[in-house]
Image (cartoon, rainbow, N blue to C red; front, side):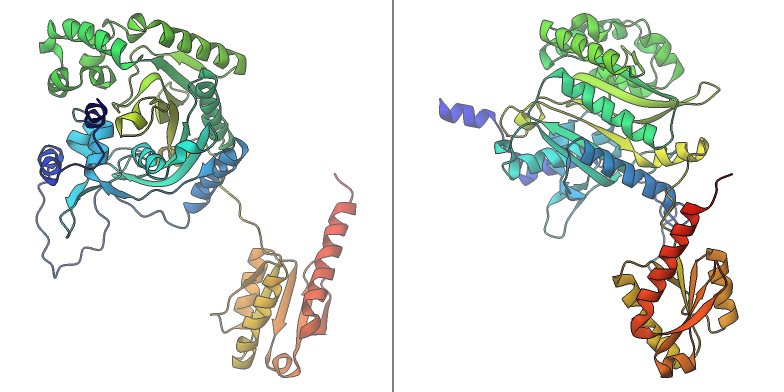
Length: 473
C-alpha cells in the first residue's frame, strides 16, 4: 500500500527521455530573420530585450524601494531563486496547454545534456525551494518576496518585453480568506504608494479542481456549438485548455464568451463560502474591486481566488499591472506536503510606464552637500584619501576627479548646489591643509587636513540650524 502511494506522487525530476519529449512540444519557433555571421557584431539588444539606462533608474529605484518597504511592513522575507531551472519544473507546475509552456518558454539543452529553461515566472521556483529546503517546518504562514527578471518568448508589445521584471509575493501554509484580502491590500499599498491612483482589482473564484472540471464541461458544451466563431488560437484551446478562451482579447471571442456559463455558478460550497468571506473583507478595507466572472488567469495551478490589478486613464483605457491568486495544490503536485498558498506578481516594466504616464515622481537620491575640488597631481593623489575620510564620517561628497581645470570643477559644484566646497591645491597638498568654503555665507578658511571633517560638520550643522530658524513665508 505504501509503495502504491509513493508511486502516485511522482518526483519533480523525470527521465531525460520524457523531458526531451516534452521539449519537442514546448520549444518556441524561431523568428525568420537573416542569420548573423560569427564575425559580424550587431551593436543592439535582441528583440524583446532592452537596456534600462541611468535616466530611467530613478523610477525603477522608487519601485524597488516601495516593494521592499511594503514587504518588510507586511512581514515578508526575501528569497532569491535561480533564473534557470529544470524544464520539467515549469511543465509540471504550469502544465501543457497554456501559452507559457506551448509558445513562450525559453528552453535549451546544457552542455551536460540537462533540459532547462529560463524562468517564465517566480512561483514554481519558489515552490521548488520551499520543498527542497524543508521550509514546511517553519511557523506558518511563511511569507516570501522576490524581485528580478523573468522571460517569455512572447510578441513584444507596449509595456511588455521578452525579458520583463517582476515583483513577486507568496504566502504558504494558510487557507483563511483573510490572507487573500491581505495580499490584495498589499498590492494596493504598493501601487498607490508609487503615485498610481486610478486602480481597480478584478476578482473571481474558479473553485477547486473538482468543481472546475464540472465548469469546464459546461463551458466546452457551450463553445463547441459555436466553435466556428472562435479565433484560431481558441479553437486549439478548446481541446487543451478551454478556460483560457475566457482570457482571449479577440473581440469575437469576447462577445461569444460574454454569454458563456460562469465559474461562480459551479463552485463547491467551501469555495463559495471562501469567496463570500473574501468580498466581505475587501468591503471592510474599502478596496476598489469588481467581480469579473471571465477572469481565470493564464497559469494552470490556480485554485479558488484569482485577481488582477488594473490602472485606467481618463479615456477609460485599462492597463494590467499584475495579478495572482490561490494555488493550494501546487506544493503537493510537486511532491511536497499538502500546503495552501496564495501569491501575486507585479509587472515592473508596466508600472514604470504607468508612473511616467501619470507623471508620478521618481526616486530622488540624497543630494551631496559637499564638493571636493583638486588642482595638480599631488593634490589629486591626496584628494582620494580625503574623499574616503569624509565618506567614512557620513558626509556625502561629490567630486569631479577627471576634470583638470579648477574653474570647470567649481562649475560642477555650483550646478549641484552644494553647501561646502573643499579646495585642495599644490600648496595645500604640501602643507597638509585644505581650503574650506562656506557656499551659503561666502566665507572660507584654511584648515589642517586632520581637522577637515570637524570643520565641514560644523558648517553643515550651522546651515541646518540657520534654515530651521529662518522665518517662513
